[in-house]
Image 1 (cartoon, rainbow, N blue to C red):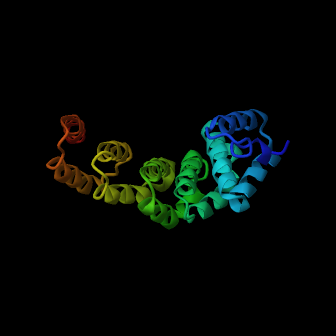
Image 2 (cartoon, rainbow, N blue to C red):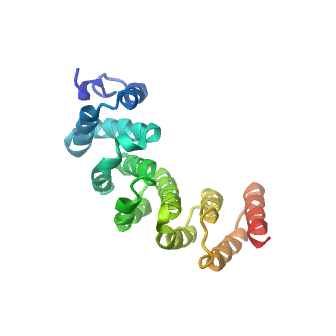
Image 3 (cartoon, rainbow, N blue to C red):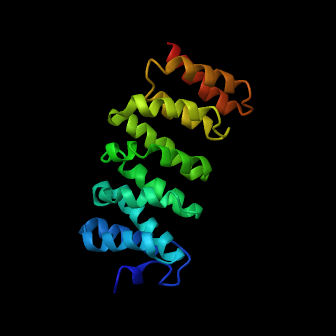
Length: 207
């Protein structure tokens, strides 16, 4: 049975269990040929095949990033998809390999940011995580200013998490701007739990 025949859509399944099971099997076996076949399905399969294959690939990436790292170009291309699921799936895959493919992803940051800007909350979450990993992998000067800038327009529900993640890689040069943004957003925070998190973060940074 080919890898395409084992995807959830081919099995007439509406759940993701077959895709996750396949990812676990390929992670264990390290079957490069079948992983390459999944990448080809992402590039040229039917809509359902593309979505299922992307799911399997980013699930593999979560378990063993090195097995999908060399396919960054395919994930970068998928960021330009008109299908939201492909966009956040590709962003999730890139996030999984960000630390081992930092040079390659840093070179494509404009495409990553553009995709996150028009993408879903999941895409934005994964983009923030990806940028933090790039900052930790030698690209702080490039990634941290983007992280700080993105805080200005971050959705209220995501803002505290993004601010905490950004603070973990904050550079001295970006600290004043970061603090100004957090203080400015604090006034508009209605939920006490979110205000408490941000006040705690400010106290830590000012301590």
